[in-house]
Image 1: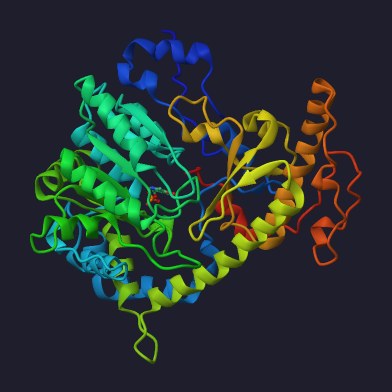
Image 2 (image 1 turned 90 degrees about the horizontal axis):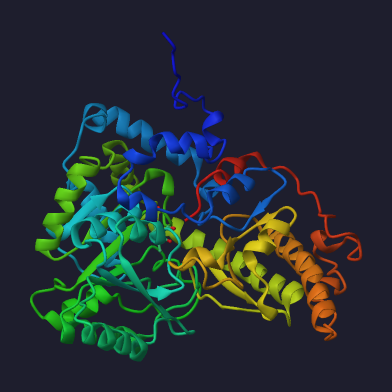
Length: 493
Ligand SMILES: Cc1ncc(COP(=O)(O)O)c(C=O)c1O
């Protein structure tokens, strides 16, 4: 008998080999559901393989800097979970989440001036699962979702997997313009189509880095109420504000408008511990109107029964930590992250000015993790990425459901790597672009202003103390930082 081996028994390393070959796929083609045809990899799987290389500076991932969390505290909290609750931690938990974890969520939301009833909360496996569960509960193939343009690259494959028809609304410095939203809604209404929900990231947008103004928040809630539309408010970054006044959540504005004792009836709120504590705990949450919450719960039962009790108990233990003055440790940590990321944001903005000045425009985020840069002259950032030596970013197309728009833009994460890497990474992009603009000048016959990548190197920046006239491939070797390597292997968000 001829034994046929299926190519699924792969070792750890083999699993990262990349896409299956066409002949491998062909064997399974007839088995795949129709919806898999629209499924896309989140922001370029192949590109992420590139960021595993130690010589590559990744400005691509949506990564916080987990090396800032004290190992002693991690050990202490895990030891406490083990000493007090091993059996519970190792057991299944309730689908809606453990009460102690829900209390932490209520505390986080209260720190954003948003009061929620614990029974309106469901604990999820990351905020990503909320997007998935909301689509699972609301989206039939062809249903409309209204989203911002650009939108969160990690939501794009989810929307595609549920075969949603996504209408993207171009943002400006104040987030989604509500008059443009209303025109879109009018057009859809004329076609007899009612969007299932409006998806928005009001604070320090991923990837755009912009924040929705207060006036627009009020108007968005009004529009949703006038037209009886659901909003999915995705807010991983609200607490990571580096300057300016905090703005109210859409959930709290709608709850006030609903006037029924605090609960919103049109906003599904998405939160996560990923950016204020750790993405590794894989814990997020949704707060939703009861009928929606019920469906999310049913969807979650089918997805994973419950989120990890081990990490839920870890979070609960963490939130009990206080210093000698009774100050909550989790809040102090968020404060530390704010200080660190503020400095890194400033380093990135300075580096952009130095190396891309005159050749690109970029957003000025007041918080969060990302800058969105758009290159002059129509340079395609997917091509640019392929030619960049030793630096990775997310090409703008990943943030558009059509996969074509946003081609001259890129998302740059300033939170996951130290200042020196940020500066060197931007310098490398600038150098590669120097080649581009040179070519553009050759093609158009227009003289291109001296690239800022050739500006005099700053004394204080060791990364720029190199000969700027060296070949493009000449990049500055950075010291290897072991603690950074695992983080770089994460998938992009
Ligand atoms: C806007 C947005 N939503 C949701 C998520 C999902 O995060 P997680 O699943 O780690 O909570 C992210 C992560 O980067 C994000 O940026």
